[in-house]
Length: 467
Image (cartoon, rainbow, N blue to C red; front, side, top):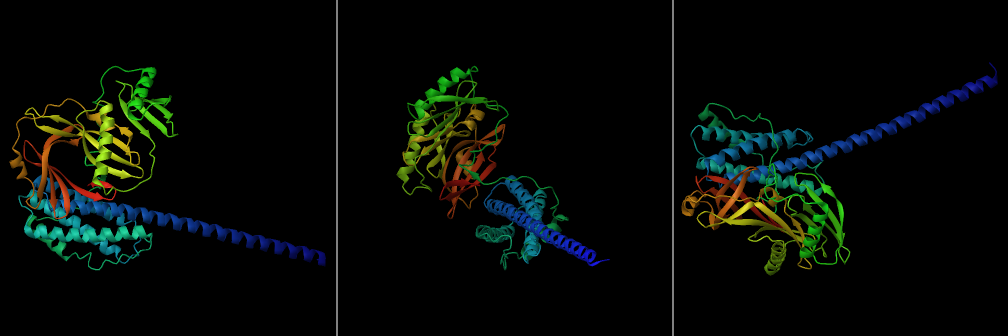
């Protein structure tokens, strides 16, 4: 082979090697990108798991707190079952976080033991026992630990270090006390606590008052009359806009909604350029919802109580203009530029006593800068409002007060109709109570004297929240 052939072979070999080197580099870059993608995906999974774990721990904390103040055997069992389920849910989430964390095993062990303890207490109560002073003390300790863990985890999430954070929790996961309690109850009942049940969806933090997002009924109860046409709906829409916002607003048809509340939708623009959207029900031509923009961007709950009254008065004026009488302001939530106020309808019992109807809610938004109503939502009211016949025979309010935990101080009391399921409401005595600096609402059945619901009130910078 001549020199020319040798050169060709050399060049060919160099080209092959170069191609191989380029291919290797490309493969390496690809694997690096793939590894980086896997790393981001894993971090995202860890972050989601930690976020959901925080929700579960916070829910467990609130449930343990309610356990300490309930005075109902039925509610005690239900809450203990909730704790057991939350334990299972949180333990499942622990399987999704990095096992390399030195505290993961201890945290998981603590969560499981809380569930075991709750299950053993349930078995004890169902076997005829009761929560003793010692059990009460154990629950207080578990609550304190759960609270510290949730706080630590929340801080890690807020700091953005959750995917690699080492949660320093010395003493938080001490399980000996819970173990002793579980063992004692297991010995008494002859069985171990069961934490192997399936996990379920659990309640989350409820905003705007305890019943602002009550489950919707199968069919709207608050609509009556004939079905109206698009033209008739437009005339109704113009009337509503004029009553709520003012004149000089032309409206156009945006379409029809065929959901569970069939409606005609319209849109327009105010004289100062703000958009207006509203919906009118096909049956009866009732205002379903209305929304326009706010002028300012003020945030947080105002310090001036007089200003809060101004917002409520403005909302009342809108409701009266629309023909809603006897509505009572309940809870408020403060957003950037506006305040959302929940109003509940009221009625009378056969005995003539006033009752607040928490199912029949209407939401009204008020512009914080102009103190004028800028929004309306009657969805809950449309689903729930109907004539009701309320019991005239009931236990006295003094008897009902005796069902409230002696740990609580009753600050106010009244009658309330509260939703328990989408189709069942219960007439209750509502007791607003305090325990130290904490606020609670207790609902007692007016017929049986049973404790129906407990809510904890959280006074935040954005208004009152309930859990």
